[in-house]
Image (cartoon, rainbow, N blue to C red; front, top):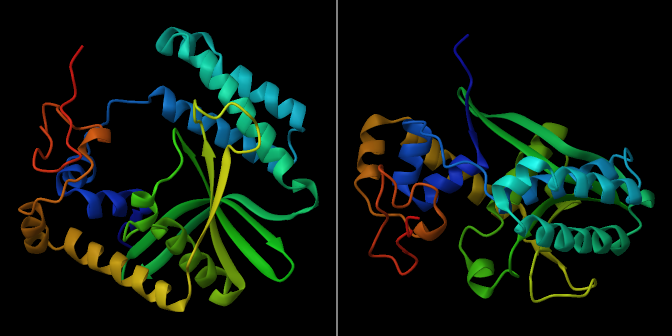
Length: 273
């Protein structure tokens, strides 16, 4: 049996946003520059929330776990005193997250729920759902996002907004033979916003429209991407296009492999130090 070819939301997002980034990351398999403090913070706060929802940590234990995981000698050496600021902001987020709902009474169906589901032929979709819970007859698929600032209109109006959750819903429903109309999809956005000092306004919730029509759309987007990626002729044509639009946050920007798309308003040359 041949190896199972899989695609994740992360790869699909790179494919849709920038041909150069997809080529460097997935065809050439070049490594990124490594973790930043923002990524480290996000991983630790996600892990802390997961441990709490799995009832492996109480609130108090979760606060300690978060602090100890972030304030390691390596992190302090690598990121300096910013770690202290991130710890303070993270604790405020956790306090609000834990108090927002009575999580111990909500029926949690899964955390870091693994998907490795057939798409067609020998293609598979791979992903992990942060949280699945049930309230009444409705199942909620949740993705937690950490951000420095609140999501703006540009983010919410993006044509691919919610694509990740829609893919998760599509394959979760396929796997468990659940009708689409019994599942809702939401982002819980955790704002690490320096301008927000008080607990109570650090979390935003956005429901993503994910009806049957949307399910058909995301499946087509996924299949079109796969048909391009694994067809040498189509992929070569794809590489000739200019797609890159968010160079300022790309790990390959201004590297030895890519100088960025200078024609996009989001291009910003990275200053070398």
